[in-house]
Image 1 (cartoon, one colour):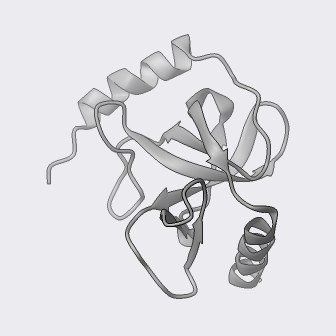
Image 2 (cartoon, rainbow, N blue to C red):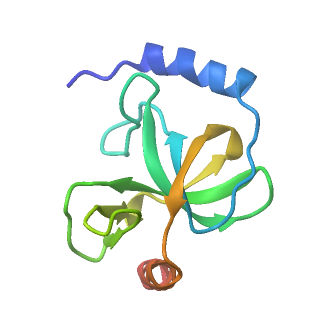
Length: 130
């Protein structure tokens, strides 16, 4: 599938210019403007280049580490599966795709990961990085 970088750059300019920074916190799951990226980097989807992400670490009111999510079932040390909302709805965090984003990229809050799952996610990230 061909990537549309021109369309993403136009969207990114709108995000920078028009989007306010929203209030967010760790453990929350937000739809995030991730855009059109290079190679195997996780892209946003649809007309707005959005992807669900879980907020791993809040550094201040402007920036945070997020981990992109997918509904594709994946296993291994680079993935962490959990459910939120509907217990049958499984999401997988793509740990290798952790990235710093500005709060302007957050569009809307989708939910919150359970505290126990978030603790397991953080533990898995620590083992991956260390």
